[in-house]
Length: 207
Image (cartoon, rainbow, N blue to C red; front, side):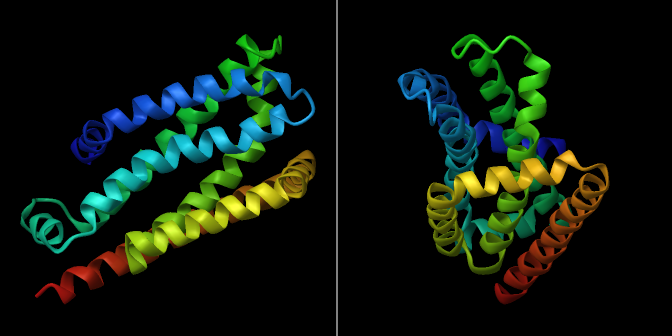
């Protein structure tokens, strides 16, 4: 599975570099907007950093020839899908880490640990969103995943304040935090199981 994850990084190398540059430039541009900068960069840096490489892979992978090639490789469906989920998770963690560093360097936040803790609600929200994003891709293909992506962007633009407050308040309570973590794991696990099922069905259809 580690080879599959490595291959994802090799395929999307240019997009990851572009996303990295964006993640560094966007917070600098937003430095003038002192009232909205934190909220905007918290959402749009991970959104672009994760979806750009994923979209690159999905557009190349969502073809009959690639599905046939996958059947010939010595990896199971769970390994293929699992590698994609781990790749996505690594991108989410990387985006939040870069964001935390930029907040300390550019915005002058002094406590790096406090910044990281403050970004946890956003990271968990993105983990749920991308779990659904991947399930949509394995279910209906790249086009369906893109429709979900643009829907996600619209929801975040108009509901970012409400969403951020909801997740922050939820994680302030110990009991709510435990319930939410269980729910998060459940949603990601359900997404993974469904994605494996959808991918198996696609391979069956190729016969």
